[in-house]
Amino acid sequence: MRGVKHCESSFNFTYIGEASIRTIKPSAVYVTGGNSLTLSGRFTQANRFQLTVGDRAMACEVRDSQNAICIASPHSKGAYRLTTSSHSIEIHPECVLRYVDIPSVSNIHPSSGPTYGGTPLVLEGENFEVGMIQCAFARQRVWASVRSSTLCECIAPASVDDGGLKDLRIITTGIDYVLAERGYLYYEPPRIDQIDPTAARVGQVGKITIFGRHFDKECVIKLGTRRVDVSNFVSSTMTVVSMPPIAGTALQGNMTVGISRNGVDFDSLGFGYESTSGFVVMKIEPSVGYVDGGGLIRVEGYGPRRKSVTVYFGTRQASCNMTSEWEASCLSPRGEIGR
Image 1 (tube, rainbow, N blue to C red):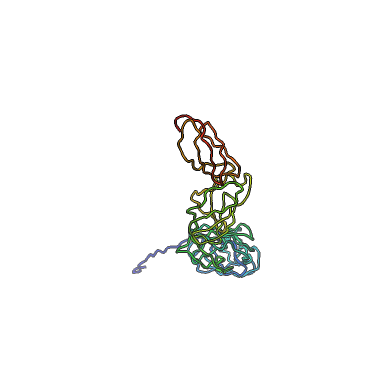
Image 2 (spheres, rainbow, N blue to C red):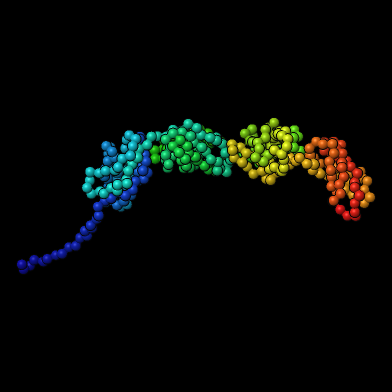
């Protein structure tokens, strides 16, 4: 037709695939509901949609083309597949939501640890589930490692300040339900600076004075692997322990003096305590004599109770009489020029 102009316009038309749900995290929630769930898959531009869990509806919202968020509805304990009345959403068969009971905590130990952290905190209770429990040390949260349905463990973080008593809360994830609340004490780690004496003989009843820092009545002193009793806690820098009067070889040899608190061992800085069944020479006076021998020698040392001890001068020996608990005397044997 004359005088009529034809016009042409173009528009974009996008073909999209069917929406799908491939995974759901977390896959376990509490029977009370309220947990936030993340769905991963492929989603259309529809902002909201609804799923069914068992016989309960669950509202969801699309966040982007690959993720959606849902809030779990309350439900009885059990495992339920996700379903939908919409034919435009494909749901993977492994998308199962498991409802579990809220856990309970009956015991927490220990109640203290060093300021640098690392102390294992053991929780005892019921209905523990992997990935659903956290320990909150003031504002610091750490995940609990679940060992069984009745036992889990948190590792205490380092204190962010000077230590002291902090609020400890055991909480469930997703709904922040507080299972237990109590105090946790951060303390400065104890250390040993000096011990006196450093030696004794096997079977001798005696005491060891230990000097150091940050001692308290919960500290345990060990000789090697054996715990010894604290007979007198003097102060935070001094304590006295009793040497066990055990004969034979039970406590024989050079043992490290160690200190621990609540099962945590601390650096002993290499301090050793020697207990021996033989006589150990610490000092000889005089330290020079004639080759003909016969000079009076005083020997200081320690060892088991006996009337005399044998002291070797190179390849030669002399029998020395014990004159006190720590001293013996004898005549020097013949020798040769030199040491």
